[in-house]
Amino acid sequence: MNKAQGALVPPIEEDPVDRRRKPDWQMRWLMEEDGTVDLTRPPKPPRVVKLRAEARDVKIDLAKSAVVVVDMQNDFFHDDGWFSLLGVDVSPLYEAVDPINRLLPAMRASDTPIVWLNWGVRPDGFGLPPSLFNAHDSSEKGLIMGDMHPTRRYNILARGTWGAAIIDELDVRDEDICVDKVRFSGFWDTELDGVLRNLGITTLIFTGVNIDRCVMATFEDAAHLGYDCLLVEDCTSTVHPQFGIDHCHLMIKQLLGFITTSDELIAQVANVESAS
Image 1 (tube, rainbow, N blue to C red):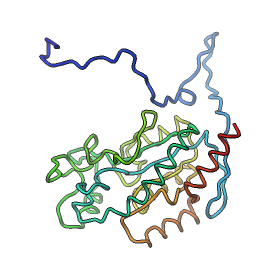
Image 2 (image 1 turned 45 degrees about the horizontal axis):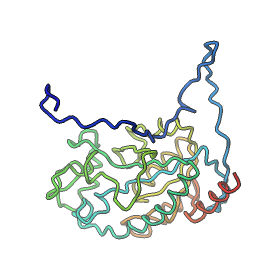
Image 3 (image 1 turned 45 degrees about the vertical axis):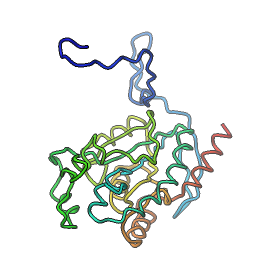
Image 4 (image 1 turned 90 degrees about the vertical axis):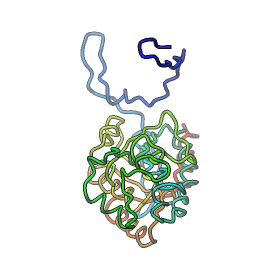
């Protein structure tokens, strides 16, 4: 018992294992024996894979790549989540779950970082622009981000709540990286760009939902910021009609990046691992 506070103090784990991914190779300077500070940041050995993709095949360096998984959260997927309360048919979103579950172990085995990019707003809604409230109030049911869930009593998509949590069907590991966002694009008012640059990432491999909302918004901003971007087609889905998907694919292939599949990535990553 903590006598000062009159509360139970949780036991301290004797030998905890810190499995977090540490960005020491890129982020931290090295101090040499004579006191010189080494700013050269020597690069990681390249791990190049060639992928069949649209509109052209590509080569990427896994040592400079990360997988970005967007918005795989209870408020979008669960029968008692926000989307379902608005009357949205969430079943199409599940098309992305199994492909993502197949892809992530292969990418982790290649030491490619996994970045979970999720809505995590303030419970009071401060920091959100009016357009976001309007965009999510088209159902006229009066439930928008930050509002109290009528039965579960949490603030919708507020960081740290059940609604903002990643669905149980997906496996999040200690070494993965989680970033909360407060816009459709994950690059506005977040630490995403800083995290990626500290890891030395230049190529982003996009998965998640909804492809024609947050995935595409983040993909576009990433391309504008100078990242090389790939979409894993079968690892994305949306609640919207097919023409939304078709438009995103057209813009990516013509202007912004490339499109591949989870099977192609898994096969080529395995070839690199077996050759190393």
